[in-house]
Every structure is written in structure tokens, then in C-alpha cells.
Length: 74
Length: 201
Image 1 (cartoon, helix red, strand yellow):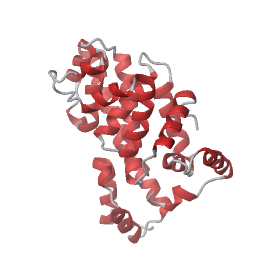
Image 2 (cartoon, chains in turn blue, orange):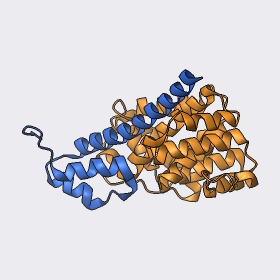
Image 3 (tube, helix red, strand yellow):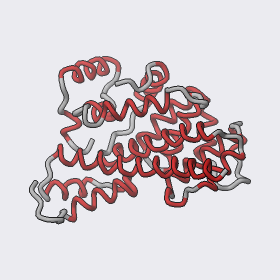
């Protein structure tokens, strides 16, 4: 769907936020609300995968950086 | 599953594989359906990462790494993945060890998971990835030092970080899409497939 400026619908932000922080709390209503805001199924799938990857890759980066820091301090 | 696109929109090759699975199971596990939906976007590259981190060369055994997958899933409260990876880890290291590890308070040195007879190194590594899962911003070199002091090499710890990161992705996709937990028959089928064939798409 077309967006104007930085405007991201609240309903989509809620889905992204929940997937990133505590995905087990995502509800049918959250997904329905994002769909009602104009996102189709493929777009919602993309957003969920992207939010999940972001959370996973942030942990990967953090873990690997901590190991490099430890090696650097030896 | 919550969205009908990943549940129903698949290519010919994927539908043939699903037909074969249906000969053995009442339903194709949701994780298979989601990974086969537009596989070039998610399933293919993601499963290559999972395969490399859980089955690729490492100081850790497959059982150790399935145990890590089960632990991360448990701490993320992802029922679907807890089921699949507890079953898979159980078939490799025994159910008692899996249950003891999942119940253990890994941050508390007095609550040792020794009942499960795991090495100090594996225990420290599980504590490290638990922390990376639940409070990543707090993880630093002092956490690495603790694992190294328990006998873990930096390389082995890197391998555990890959498992941890990949499962932090999988758990989120599974819960956001509300994967239906597998029944007993489906779990034992998956455990067998994952220990013999791995995660190759």
C-alpha cells in the first residue's frame, strides 16, 4: 500500500513490535487489524519474516561482538 | 496457521512433497508450509542457515545443538518449536536430560542441571544463549569469559550463537503465524526426519 512520508499505520507497528519483543503475544486481532490497515497476506508475511530476522540477527551480532571483544581484551 | 497465503500458496514441487508427507501424516506441519511458501524469500535461505548451524561441522554434537534449539524455544515460549526440538533432542540425548535442562535456572550456579549430566561447558553455553535470547543488550565479554572459564572455546561459542540467532527467528515466525503444535505421531515423524535427513529443503 502507498505510504506518505514516515507514516506507518499503528496496527502494523504493533505487529512488528510484538514479533520483535514477544511473538507469542501476537493475536488474530493484531493480524486482522494490520490487514484492515491495507496490507495483504503476502505483505504481512514479509513483515513478520523481516521483524523476526531483525530480532534474530541483532542477537547474532551482539553475541559475536561480545566474543570478539573478549578475544581483543585477552 | 494465521495467514492463508503461507498455508495454501505453493509451487508444484512443494505440493508434491506435501502430498508425500500426507501419506504418512494427517496434516503437513505448519513449519513446512511456511518454509515452502515463496521459498526463495524465506524458507530456502533460512533452512540453509539452520542446516549449517545445527548439522554443519562443530565441536558440538547434533544432540547438544538440538538441546540449544529447545532451550531458546522454551525461553521464547514458542510451543510449536519446543515440541519439535524437545522431541528431536530427546531422541538424541534422552528425554530426561531435555526436561532437566528446560526446567533448570541456568543463571543460578546452585541450581545445577547436573541431574541431566551435562558438561560444565554445555551448561555455561546454554546460560550464555539464554541471556542472549532474553536480554541481548546485557551480553558482553564478561559473559564470554564465564563460558570460556567453563572450558568452551570461542569457536564453539560462535557456533552456539548461530543456533541461538536462527531459533530466535524461527520462534518468532512460528508464533506470529500461530503454527499448530504437532501431535505425537507428527512429532516422532519430524524427530526422525530431522535426525536422519536434517533441515535440507
